[in-house]
Image 1 (tube, rainbow, N blue to C red):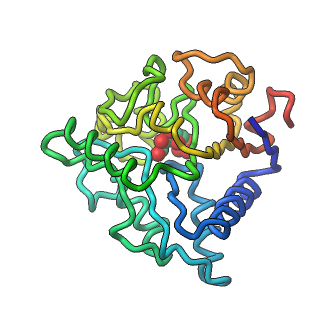
Image 2: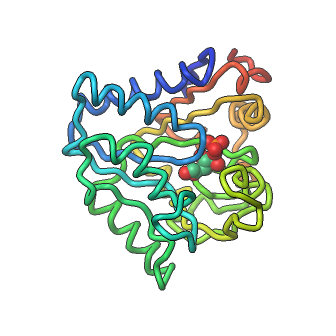
Amino acid sequence: MRVISVKDPQEMSEQAARLIMDRLRQKPKLVLGLATGGTPEGTYQKLIENHRTEGMSYRQVTTFNLDEYVGIPKMHPNNYFYYMKHRLFDHIDLPPEKAYLPNGEAEDLQTECARYEHLLKKAGGIDVQLLGIGVNGHIGFNEPGTSFESLTHVVELDESTRKANARFFSSIEEVPHQAITMGIQTIMCAREIVLLAAGEAKAEAMTRLLSGSVTEQFPASVLNHHPHVTVIADEAALKRTGNR
Ligand code: F6R
C-alpha cells in the first residue's frame, strides 16, 4: 500500500484529481468507481475545474458509484445520484447513460444488486476505484463484520454510520436504515484503488488500516491484500501513524 501524506484536504483533492486524470490520459475509456460523502467533494471540484480550463474529456468514461441509500427518491438532496449529478456529472461531458449507481428505489432490491454486478462485469470491471473510509473502517457501506467474499448487497447501516451521516440530513430519524453497496469482493476486483482520508476524525481508522492486520471487523483492512492501493491522507488523518 502506497501512502501519500499531504498537508490538508485541499492538497489531498489535488493529488487525487491528478491521479485520476493521469489514468484517464492513459486510458480514455476508463471505468471509474466513485464515492460520495464529504471526502471526495474537493476532488470532484478539481476534476470539474480541469475539464473547464484544460478540456479533459469524460466522453468515453463509464462510472460506477459504490453505493446508494434505500428509499430516498432520486431528486432528494440526500440521494447519491442527486449528489453525483450536482457535484460532478452536470459539470463534465460524461454521457448520462454511462453513469451507473445502484437503484435504491428498485422494487426488488436483490434483483437490483445482481443487475449491478452484471453491469460491472459487462463494462469489463473497474480500472480505478475511489474510496473514502468510515470511522468504523467501512468502505462503501460495508460495515464491520461484512464478509470479504461479499458482492453487491443490501446492508443495514450501523448506528455509528447513521450518526456520522446525520449531518447531511435535518435529523438522524431521516437517515435511512438500509443501503445498497458494492461488496468487499466487488471493490477488491478493481484494478487500482485510491483511498482518501482527511481530518482527525479519521486518525483512528488510519492507524488501524496502516497497522497491516487484516480482519472482517475492520473492513478497510482488506485493502492490505490488494496489489495496487494508494492512500492519500492529510496530516490530521495520519497524526497517529508513522506516515506524517
Ligand atoms: C460513500 C461511501 C462511504 C464514505 C465514508 C466516509 O459513497 O461509500 O464509505 O466514503 O462513509 O464518508 P465521509 O467522506 O463523508 O467522511
